Length: 400
Image 1 (tube, one colour):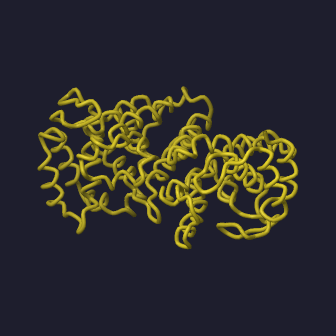
Image 2 (cartoon, rainbow, N blue to C red):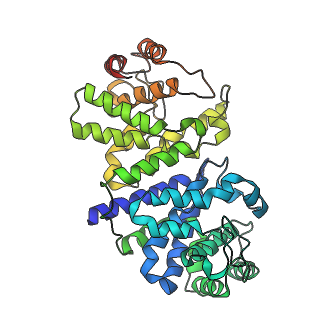
Image 3 (cartoon, one colour):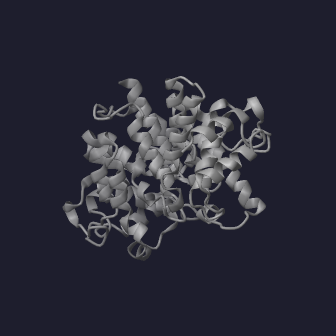
């Protein structure tokens, strides 16, 4: 159970990091909110501090389809006119409820944009009708937005900014709780420092009470499926892409004679192969014409981000080079490392075909959609250059 609990914690943390990738930097929004919320919960909601920590990590998961990261939308009026923003607490809660052990966290997430005076969203709740965990998330979320002001606020400046919102956005109790917490030792400076935030997240994970994982279907399936859905939700045209690549990768692996256990691991790698693509701006992925040199450089970074995300999960480290290598080419002209031939992990060579097959048979803004016969002709034509000839030969036979 300890191994399962560790896997769960690491995978949720990796998922939240994925959501906080913003082009070439990590924003650490979810991590800072989670650390703050857990610290506040120690004082007034100690029995639920594990749930609120995960709620902090995942509270904005429903906003993944926004063109920019949610922290850039600071005009509260836009939160009421932009339907993705307005509905993201409800969507986030819906996604998190699919992870069985986090149903309590889902209720907290649902209310994290409600305000004490009733002026919040999506339900316009007021006062103690707002979930207490949601109230904690609200002030932690606000703190993170204020922490991004340039030049950075001092402790007194932060207290003043938060005080202007007491009685309206959050209650006097929640405000006083936050101020008391920020004044403890060097906590304010630590939570303002992104490096300290990155270090602190794992300390908290290791010290949290374990969550009940008996309701999980398997060690991986439930959360990995959610992970894949979130990756694909970034862009409308990629809906179902990760699941199809996972299935095609599994089909090819079995047809190539790999053992069931190895084929299943490659299937997991397929679900997660595009995790780093969340960091690529939508205007690049949606661009109908050729990419500029700078845009292509940014695009080529996404497998590197995928590898960084998966490296956070100890039990998935063997999949890092497979998921991250699906854009390598057999002739060495691929990315991110320009590997060629047998130097490319066999699983990555399999997934390269699976990924290309789904991209060509799906509607994409940058290329025409092909049918199965046309796609297999392209795979055959590029056998030995883009694709491993052995994998290409099998793909032409077995892919639907």
